[in-house]
Length: 129
Image 1 (cartoon, rainbow, N blue to C red):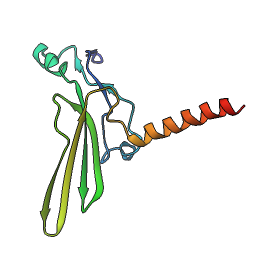
Image 2 (cartoon, one colour; image 1 turned 180 degrees about the vertical axis):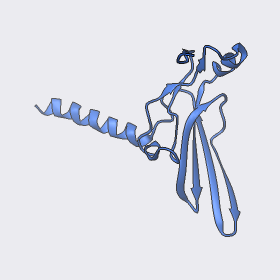
Image 3 (tube, rainbow, N blue to C red; image 1 turned 90 degrees about the vertical axis):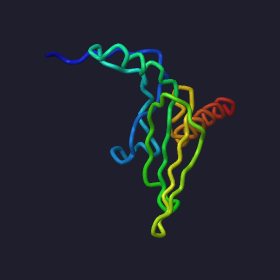
Image 4 (cartoon, one colour; image 1 turned 30 degrees about the vertical axis):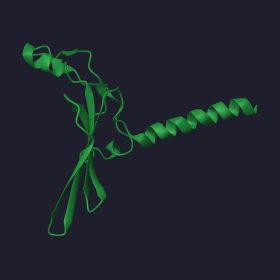
């Protein structure tokens, strides 16, 4: 058997990572990738189901208000921005979800902020010349 070939659809592009596996996921996640991805050998109904993925999701987990894990992925549906908190044995565990609908929207805000700052500095330097 050769390598698998993939078919991509018209889904949204989302960053997809887990800070437990990749520490850069927190501040510098990988570039957004197509959420509509299935092998040519997948069942047709399975591929059609994946083609309806139009949202990105970010999940943040906190223990006693300290961020311990962040995951970024694709989501088949929009969820209200929400946090759920559980307290057991004086340990507070909070899980927050945020979905969004445009490509790259679940990338790190810090990366976008840095890009904006660099663009502003370049623009200002052109006017100061």
